Amino acid sequence: MTDIALNESLGSSYDQARERLRNALEAAGRAQDAAKLLAVSKTKPAAMIRQVWQLGQREFGENYLQEALEKQTELADLDDIVWHFIGPLQSNKTRAVAEHFDWVHSVDRLKIAKRLSEQRPAHLAPLNICLQVNISREESKAGVLPEALEELAKEVATLPNLHLRGLMAIPAPTEGVDAQRQPLAALREALTSLQSSLPDAPLDTLSMGMSDDLEAAVLEGATLVRLGTAIFGTRQSA
Ligand SMILES: *Cc1c(COP(=O)(O)O)cnc(C)c1O
Image (cartoon, rainbow, N blue to C red; front, side):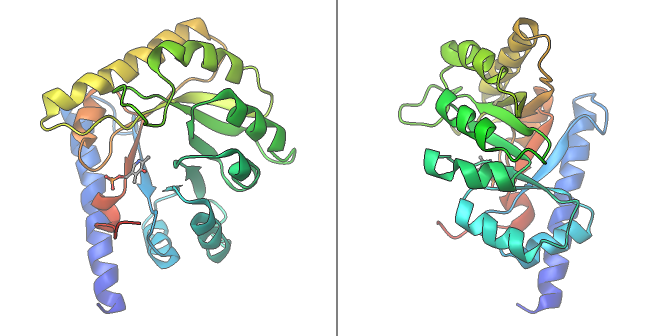
């Protein structure tokens, strides 16, 4: 594939993804700025991120720390880019994440949140946090179980260098918008209930909706949809 072909196909899939989000917001009767697109660039080269940035995209999501740090170095001249860490996070990776990202969507235990707060450099704004919820109650899946969410959220909200912004989930795959909506509605309800138990926390974010369930997520109130395949094409399995 030539560079020009890469440019054109990436440009048109990015345009289509933005149009899909616009249409979904309209169909849901929501304002056009009610949900933002997070471009999930895991396994994709820095050159593709740069192209999408040139088309106006600013929020990018990465899953694998080492790969992300390398791309951030290559893209250091893009100073208004916003980096979201959305992958599984172990204790030994928290320092680099606290230093190099603006958001973390995958916090599901207090120990990780405490480390992120302690390790967040003082000259940076507080790190934005979404708690990942195991909304489909899948065994051996990441995420706090719904019944343990409120206790975790209350503790995380007290940590000084974090801003608890909301919730993230990756529901078990299902076919059809109606079936897809059920776990997404449960995540929305969980956020609503946290907003009343933690009225001082800046809880404005529902990180849900991927390439296969964007429309269902927008119908259920997603504010940040995480699209990978729909923008960058299929991934080689990592
Ligand atoms: C990979 C990934 C995505 C993007 O998934 P697509 O189906 O490619 O859109 C979204 N969220 C998380 C947490 C991911 O790991």
